[in-house]
Image (cartoon, rainbow, N blue to C red; front, side, top):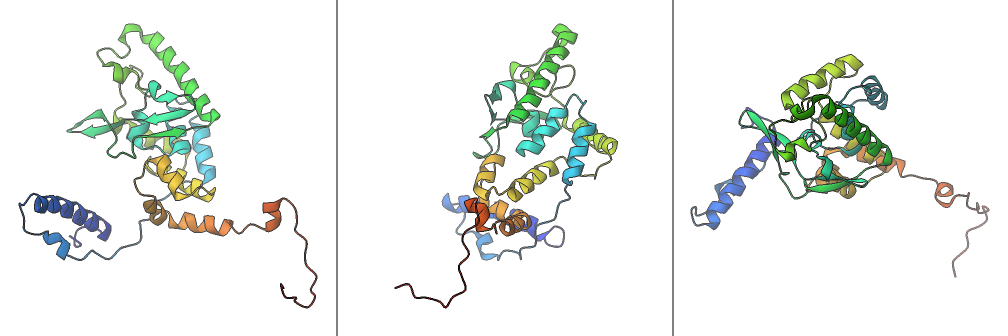
Amino acid sequence: MLEKVSGECANKCKKILSGGLKRAVQRGLLAYNVVDRVPGFKQVAPKEFPLWTVDEAQRFLGVISDHRLYAVFYLALTTGMRHGEVLGLRWKDVQGDTLHIRQALVQKDGGQQLKEPKTKKGTRTVPVDPHTLGVLERRRKAQKEEKRALGAAWGFGLEAVQTDLIFTTLEGKPINLRSFDRMWKGLITRAGVSDIRFHDLRHMYVSLMIERGFDARVLADRVGHEDPSFLLKRYSHSFEKARKSAAVPLSDLLGAAPPIPLMDAPKTLN
């Protein structure tokens, strides 16, 4: 496998295969798990992903501020939600100042459908700030106008679970994921910022939060990761920057400068 894929990918495949054979052993279909006898591949450093600078993120949001799906990109940068999680978000999932992540829009069998998150951690609650709620409220008002313009034709033939989506086409249908990706590329060109994937907004969010001092456990819960140690490994560079910023003078911690002892001869404590 190492001749065709990276060590990281080969290790993932080994883990999946080992899990399947382990069940076969438990059911008496195999005498032992042959994969357990294969040593793991040497771990390679995580691939670095390109991220926008803060200035690029601000420039992008400023250029697309008049776009009808502006809130999609704003949410990605303020919550770290995945591509499909944002596009699968419903109005009933917004309760007070909290978003409830219960489903995602995913591609399957040449089409797309709304599905529950793959893991228990994927189903989660994400508190948001008042400004983010204001951006969502602006989206709600815009959608009402879109409904009023089309009348009965808006969302025609769709199930209620689909018509409750926050982000839809002008006709009220779920957004086509491939069309969204093309739109994303177009907006990047329009804004004149670095060419990154939409998913990289999630990476940028996590990196910025780490640099602000949030620990791995809090972030893992917020972005839906099962294991906080994954964040420690994946974002080791950001955590290192955060560790260095933890060297805070005592005067900052106490709010005033502590007294400086005179340089007399040392005295014992007793």
